[in-house]
Image (tube, rainbow, N blue to C red):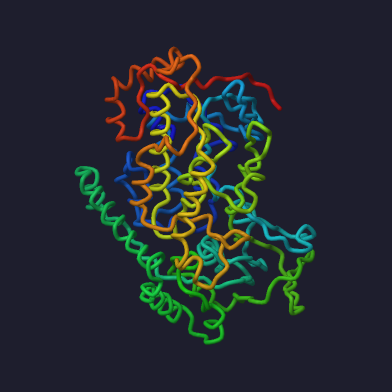
Length: 520
């Protein structure tokens, strides 16, 4: 988002980051074996291709390095205030701005963009006695690298995307490893390989070759939508692949029974691994399927009364996705928290803007997640929509954009109608995609190109638009940074930025300004 704003000539930008470095999910999730399950050439920014990926599926350190390099190369880092944890953001209608309180001071801005992704805050299960455990206990997103697991009696709670990556890494060192599984995942082979030197040289010298590779990967991934959304029976081939993967990795019939899902493949996230099943088949590993009843100072007790003595507990239990924590910090003009407005049913127009919260844009918002392709593609589509909204505000002298409640409701109904019949709601599983009402508020029910087309242009008819008072019905005067005005050249900068940047003649964007360094 910052890169696109800067490409449009807007240099007066503030990014608030609670950590001490950029990188988000790929900074925090540094557990052993962490890697992406989307091919490297697609899991990267369209404007910043990386010809030097080492593998077809990139490991965590490489992705983090890439993100830091992009932030540096595009001069984003100087706009970041590290160690600034947002505690509250409130819309002030009289001043027509957002006042954002952080652990390091207060900032005001006319437009506020939330870049707090859904995989930001770890989710811990509500297990009786969890606070009494006397050993080492941590979540995979906050890995304790000081804890030597050699010879330890380790419990892993959860068998999701993170767990299937770190379990094979820690299994050889652990003395005993107990994996507490609630629902077995479908796991297909991971076709990962080294990218050859010849390929790397080709991508460096002929960038078009990498773009072609990216395009081929993209359309290959889009084919999954036919099974997820159109006809789940088309996923039978993927299920056969997963069953063959299980047969190869696990020879014991009883263990194989425990690890065989009883729901349609794709209902929960399909996982990729070549070494997860072989690791579970090792002599020092036990897969426990009885539900956990409580945690004691030195043991995990299951509902059947079995006491599993352990000295380390690792939670691979995912994140707070259906109830985004940032929503508990954003208030409207009346002080109503976004989380209270949403309740248990998060929704947003185009997955990006919310009725009652003017000039707020949410990246990776409701129903923009994916089960088949690159989340980066969806985020860039949302950025294009955000920039189109800012361009409209500039061109029409508007200083406030707020989605109409009826437009948001109509959009939500359309998404829900398209969701019916998909594998995510009819596949017979209880996944983190669903809220307490059973509605999938997480995923986009269709092709990503369709979403990109829907967010390509701003739709003013779906919004309450307020004309800036100083504009007299035309363009606002004197409120836009001169650098932005110079950058566009009357719209040329917009085209140079690939259609995803705000134009920059005299216009209706107020400068982001520092409101002091007060600490709330």
